[in-house]
Length: 106
Image (cartoon, rainbow, N blue to C red):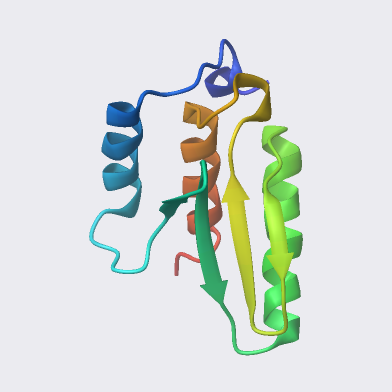
């Protein structure tokens, strides 16, 4: 198991804001805190590209043993991370969100 997932705890509001700022960097359309979860919608040109992303994301989720909620549509996929066993957002959520962003890096 990835050490980031051991001894998980819910992050404080201050820690979440700090981590969110670090995760998004200069991105204008980055991850957002919505209803107790980290959420981001990824746009794609077509269904094939969307499903390729979803399959790659599934591999990351399996590797990390941390699984997001997904809403898959023709030209986009919305990804939501939170940690159910701590009742909030943990460092695992930010770690996995960054790994998902890395899937689309050139």
